[in-house]
Each structure stands twice: as C-alpha cells, then as structure tokens.
Image 1: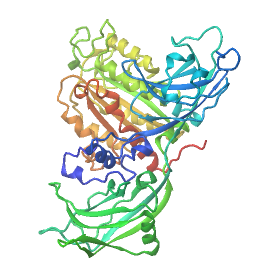
Image 2: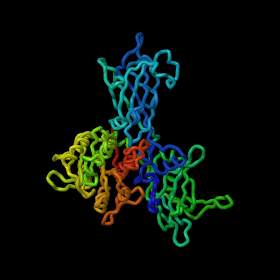
Image 3: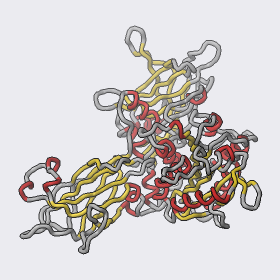
Image 4: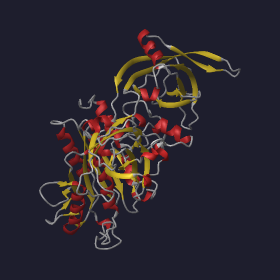
Length: 576
C-alpha cells in the first residue's frame, strides 16, 4: 500500500498517472500514491472524496401554534463507540413543513468504512432567527424527528437520492407521522475530464558510466503559493536514452486546468534512491497538446553551477494526446454496478478444536466475536450495500464433510446451494458448519479462487456491470503456492478482487508475495504475468486496535482495482 516499495523493481513502477494504477483519491474514491505521500510527508491528512449532501423534507410536524415550524437539519456522524459527532447544519427555513434547504453539507466519503449518519431536524425558536446557525444550542430548539442511514446507502441509489422516514430519538415512530427526509449526494469534483498522453524522449544525456541511463519522468503541478505537488511518475525504462513510456492518464483534478504550469523532470533511476536529474522543463497540458499537434519536441534544461539554465540536446515528445471522460467509483455504483460479496473460511486443523476457548474458531457464549466472525461482519457490512440482492456465496475449505471426504471448497451452509441470505446468513452458516465439519487440511487456496473466478467469468456473458469480491479468512501458510499464483494470474483478467485476512500467529510471509504491493506482478508457472493486482492481504495481529480497522486496511485498494478493470475495458457507467 502507499509507496511501500520494498524492492528495486517496485520502485520502478509508474504511480498516479496510468489507468493501471490506483486513481486520484479526490476524484475516484481511491488513492493517488504520489499525492498521498506528499501530503503525509508534510504532516497532513490524506485526501478523500468529498460528497455534498442536498436535503429536503416533507410533511414535518408543526410545533408552532400561530405559524408553521421553522426547520433546520443537523447532520451527525456516528462513531464506532456510538457517540455522535456533528458534521454540519443547514440554514433555517421559516414557516415551512415541506422545506428544501439551500445550504449543502459536505462530508468525506470513504469506501472502506461503514459511515453511519444521523440527521436531526429541529424547529428553531423565533428568538434565535437572527443568530448564526452554528451558535444555536440544540437543547433550546424543538426536536422534530431524526433519520438514520449509512452514506453507502445514499451513493448507491439511482440518482444518489434516498428518502427516509423520520422517527423519534429512540428509533421508533409515534402514532402520528413525523414526515420524511430526502437526501441527495453529489461528488464535489471540478470535472471528470482527463487526458491520456504518451511521452517519449530523444537523445537524453547519459548519466551512467558502464551502461546507459535508466530514465523515468516525474510530473508535478504548481499550487497556490508557488510550490509544486507531484501528481504522477512514469515507470523506469532500463538502459535507454530514447525511452517511450506507457500511456499516462491524468485527471483534471490532478492537473487543475489545461493552462496550469506543470514541471516535468527526467531522472536516471538509482536503486539507492539518489536519482540523478537529467533535465527538466515546464509545460502546461495545453502546451503538451500543441507539441502533439505540431509534432515538435521540447528541450530539457538543467541549472548550471553558476545558476544559469543550460538548454540540453535531449527532447520530450508527445506521441499521443487524447481528451476523455474519467468516471469515478461513485459514478459506477450509483448507476447500477454491483459489488458481489463471496467468502471462504479456513477449516484446517491448525485452527484448534472449536470447543476449546483457545481455538480460533471458538464461539464465545458471551457474544464476543472470534477473528473469523469479526472479519465476516466488518467486511460484509461494507460490501452488502453495493450488492443489490444480498445473496452471498459462502464456502469452507480444508475440512472433512459429513460424507467423510476432505474438501477444499464446500458449501458453508451444507446445502446444494452455495448462496446464503445477507451477512447474517453467512454468520449462521459458519456457526452451523463448525458442528457439522471436522477440521482437517492442508490449506489450499486454488480451489476456492477457481470457483470464484468461474462465477465471475460466467457473469460476463449476461452482465458486464458486476464486480466480485472474495474474502478468504485463513490461519495458516498455504501449501499450493504455485497453483494459487496460477489461479490469481488467470483471475486478473476477470471482474474479481480477493481480500485475505490472516488470523492467529502463523508466519504469513508467503501472503505478502500474493499481495503485489511491492510493484512486482504475479507470474504463473507458464510465465504469464498478471494483468493487474487483485489481492490485498492483512494479518489481523497487525491491525492497530482503535486506530484502523480490518475493513479499512483491506478495502482501501478495492475502488482502484474496480476502476482499473472497467476503465481498461472502456466500460462506462449506465446512463441515468
């Protein structure tokens, strides 16, 4: 994740500007590593997609005697400890039981988190009408009702609009109706415009003694105050003074406007991290378009020891310049695209006897969730809002069935159908299987991955708006590493991502190989490379309690994987 490239090969990967990478977070609900790294290095928070909420209500309760209620909405975010944290307020609308508020409320949308929201509507007393709404004490106002939902429910609805019936604070209605609240969400982005460009250089200066330079480009955008923020870098082209890089896709959110100055720097890559500057130049996106149209090159410059700029022989050319629409994750899911959740649970003997309290499969009578239950609940609660039918395939592996055979992919509910109803269905099937399945082994991932891939592949013939997410929860080291790699390489062409949670104290070093965060793509036994990274692994023991949840760690890369798949196939959101 992030810029944690542990090897030289990982450091040579492109970041932030190619359709095969995670897109910019502000525009696409995923991370741009270059920008995130810049902000985090300066002690600032990472960026998230900002969503603007528009609010209206109907048939509100009339609390006034001589006139109608004067309503105002206050939005709260419900935290993990149950406490409410205020996000924002609308203006007060006078004498209206069917108000449409003009003041929008902006909230940061994070795909990887369940974000419960509570909307409370108050009738503001006339004595407070000339005061700023932020200064109003809510206990001095008349409560009209509240509505609760999670942010995901709003953004996945058609037209991103959700209507909720108002209730009392205790979550129950009363004999007379309190009315309804309608919430509409919009992404606060400047534009969905993007440009795809292919850059090449000619006659670069050689900075190596015994070979040729290994050049890459870094592109930065000027920000207010005169500084520069890196927005992307290309991959490294080894041993080449006339390199051609893979196409870059830059969103307007990244470059600001076509006239905004960009600094393009060319470096010779060194594994030590001390990259040598070959040259740099300043051009806007509009300038790059002109270079492409006129088929001209732009010379790099470098600063001399005397402070002067020296024009170099090396030039930058633009072989491709294409303006396009770059749709966001929210564009897809709000137009009817589904994330279909699947789960596979490890039933190998290394988990320990489920009847013993020290077993990873122990069901605590007090209701405390074990690690398997925790992973199912946390991930499932997020994904279920993006799955229209909420029927989830659920399997077990590494267990001995009642028939006496060891199976590496059996239906968790013990029936002929592998689907269960909702997250509660998964939890019930898991608890039931612990009574009917004997723990065995070994730990094989290949069969469940192939089964999930088969379902994802079959969906393509009838529906190209489905994306599948397989959660594998395991306690041990897999014994079919090459078969798993082969299965993952094949699956990388399908609408499928795989989330792996490691529970217990085993050595999960092998899992890090499957999770290609170091920039090194998986390779099959036949030499074929994975077309994209589809695996995310998190060991439960490394999740810092209270700081980041399993679901945040696992799902932060999923929107980027989702977008990479659909964009690379030019599959656009459905027309509203």
